[in-house]
Length: 215
Image (cartoon, rainbow, N blue to C red; front, side):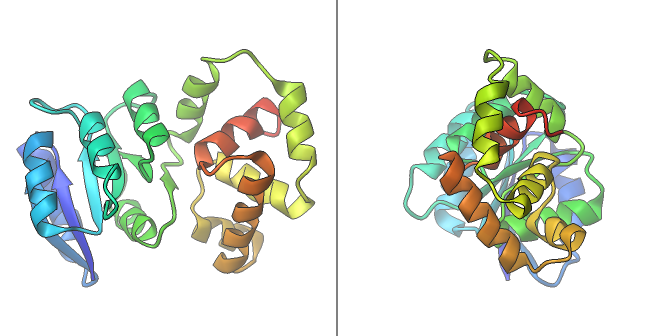
C-alpha cells in the first residue's frame, strides 16, 4: 500500500486528486494540507510514502517545504505538481532533490502511474513539459555542445538510447517497453549513465543530451 499526502492550497485541486487516486486499491490517501507549514505537521504525523506537492502556496511555499522535508533521513518522495510548463521554481525543486513533476491537468491514468513510479524509486518527468524545463535549464548556461558530445560518446549505444528516452521524459517502464528490455535492464543502464556523466539527476542527463544535439 502506497500512502499519499496531498499538499495544495486550492481545495478544488485537492478534491480532484482525491477523486483520481481514491479508487486505486494500492493507494491510500493518508491526509492533506493546504500550505507548507501545515504539511510539515501532517507529514511528520502520517509518514507518507509519496507527497503530491504544489509549489505556489501561502504561509510556506512548496519549494521551502520540499527542501525541509528532503533534509530529513526519513524523507518521503516528493512529486511536484505545477500549472506552468516551464516554472523556474519547479526546476529548483528538482535540483533540491524532488523526485519528479507533473502538470496538474495530467490525465488521471498518467497521474496514478506517476505516483506508483515515484513510490518505486523512479523519478518522473512529465513528457508534456520535459522539453520546456530542459530548455529553461539550459538557457541559463552557455552552450557546451562539444563537451556534451564528448561525454555522450563515452556511453554505449544502448546507454545513449536510454539517455535519449530519459531526455524525452519517459519513465523506466516506458523506456523498457519502447526498447523491448526489462525494467531492471533500464535501471542498470541509467546507473551506468549517471556514473559516466558524473550525475545522479535525470534532468542533468536530459540537459547533456540536448546540448549534444541528440534530440
